[in-house]
Length: 307
Length: 290
Image: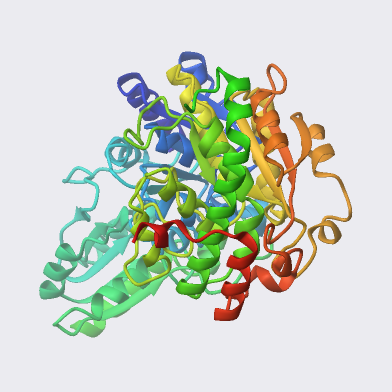
């Protein structure tokens, strides 16, 4: 995803001479090409996230379109008040980039975990919040984010995540249909689209066909699609690499309070705890019960009950 | 009249008038705080002479064209002291003086912390300390890329310098050799519930800015001669940002408010207002107009 991010960013920068990039001293060698081509529009502020955001705000006030980049935990939580007061409050067109969102850096320990980034950014008025699932979604959504009149956040992963195919293109603010089906809907965000698709392959053999949507845009939530979905299924299962508060499942739960039809919600994702033990990411997903295996198990037992 | 080129003439004519102006605007602040029932008066009074020096002598700004791209950028980072900012902006005709009656009222363009949504003339909203200098550095960077020869000034409080983000911004400004950036610290010694010297471990602000790669000088920030002399020396050094450490008295100009932590928050009573106006021998500018 990071490769797709920097390539798309470089393309946009070539077309938009007002785009300017700030980093909190991260992205070793990632931005070398960008820096060579647009040296004056590449700013390393140092390990100073508050300054990165305030400087981005000053640049935006002077008509620039800043992109502020750091590891997700530092880009969001460390500079939260600066984003709240100097980005969200004045509604400036700044894109905050959280690299390694969720438990991308699982084994690096709690300091590098960002399972609260979507909550922190979603709670800010006017903020658009996006968690693409693969490089194609990054490449499709990034140019759209860089056209927005207000602030936005994008959670990106690392390198070499698997890409997937869907019938629909990724469009900002719209749930992306991965596979059509019936009775149960799986709604994922971030790269959990990948285990969802793996699970669908397994379930297919048992003639189990849930619907799968990738909700890359967490805010504003695509309630139109959810409303339509509520007419077609009895259960929605959300899958996210985020704490229970403030992420995708919380957003869907809030939508449900406005939904006329009674619908059951299930959530697969991390529990409300720091992820201790320096686990490798896949092991963490397995133990916390939101990998492909867990998705298969949940859907299968639900499908049987619905029969 | 506000050209900085003819420094001597500007200074020799203006100073007694500027001092009178500062007294008038202090009276305005006390009246606003009394009527609006909002405090932060000692912080407003301490920086009044600095604002008068900036707005009547140094800033290249035009009330008739307030968003001119070439204007100097002024960030009032110590937002809690905004009666002083509003008074001086009204007096310079950036907006009607009668707006001052609405200070801190419902739906007012002049809330008790400056909000750009309410008053779009502002460069930015303020109220949360430690943002202004960082925003200022972003502006300087952008202006430099655009080749605009505007200066950027950030007025902060000494308590604000407790915030780590101020020093992140200070480092960035020096690293980028922001010669067009001026930070002014209203060093009035009083914070919300304590003394700034004690809370900063009795260390020098001037030395701190110098250690961060700035050129800095300390002046009496309630003396318009010194303020104007310092402003006219800007930039203090080629290739470095400049800082003025303006030693001021909290509540300056009204003796019973001076150097009192109490007056950081206290709202003046009818009696306080009467006493203050008697001492200042001036009335608020918006009352005069009616």
